[in-house]
Length: 340
Ligand SMILES: Cc1cc2nc3c(=O)[nH]c(=O)nc-3n(C[C@H](O)[C@H](O)[C@H](O)COP(=O)(O)O)c2cc1C
Image (cartoon, rainbow, N blue to C red; front, top):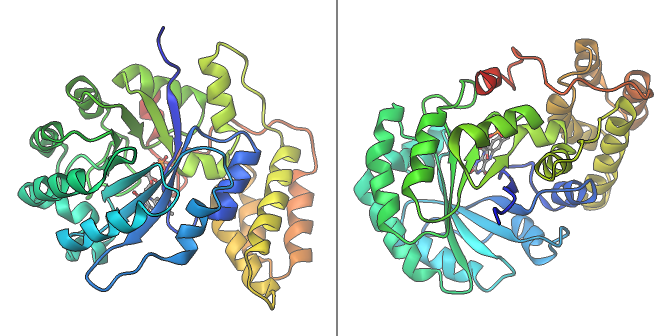
């Protein structure tokens, strides 16, 4: 029997922490979680804030710990240290496009040096011992998706346990359509599960990405911040059931839950203004699809009262939200190509 595709929450720095994972799990959640990256270098120690999500796993599902770095002895040490914690596996970041990361030849910067990628994969494969898994999250190349063929040859050399592919180059950052042909090429070449990532924003874009690539599952980031029910909606679609409709009132409930869970993480004394500021990071995504005036009003909120009275004035209704975010917002664009 064909297995149902797996769903993964994409790692997102300063987003996919303990409280966020807990909220996702409460609303249905994916099958697999990945932490934001641990920075690994000669002087690094594992960040306690990220370790919390692993050791107190609030999801009941497997969690992979992601590392970013380029110094092989340090990465090997990091992998060994992580295996002393409650991780299911260790994931290597080969995609971060931040200039400060790429300048240090880490993350996406490593894609300019395939010999180094080869050496890192070899060393980590040896360092990550059963029952722990070793997985990789990559982009297609640094400058061009045409680099992917050579990169894929490196991946096929190593017995990695899963490969998640963000279907863009490092240069393309986050805004372009994804190159599904290259993801398909990887699905055909790799013997491990391959997860397609980038621009899944609703059930239709998710089903279409799977259809175009033959991937074993989907990894979803920004689309899940905006609509955490995307995971149960896709699970329903895979089972041939009708996905639930998300209403404005449900979105309000999600924002309240996110506030509560993230506020719990605040070390005393609780700073309300700082917390409103933290919530705005999520709200940038959550507001896409509601009237633009909502986004603008939330940006001006300073207190909890102000914040929630704005939320209530836009969201206290049983009206269904649009499945898709606006196509040309700065946070979501290029996804309609997946539907073509
Ligand atoms: C705020 C933010 C933080 C991110 N942090 C990480 C990270 O720590 N590690 C990583 O591999 N990718 C990171 N990414 C990339 C995402 O995991 C994902 O590959 C990308 O957003 C494309 O998927 P999406 O269209 O579903 O969001 C980040 C993306 C965003 C928007």
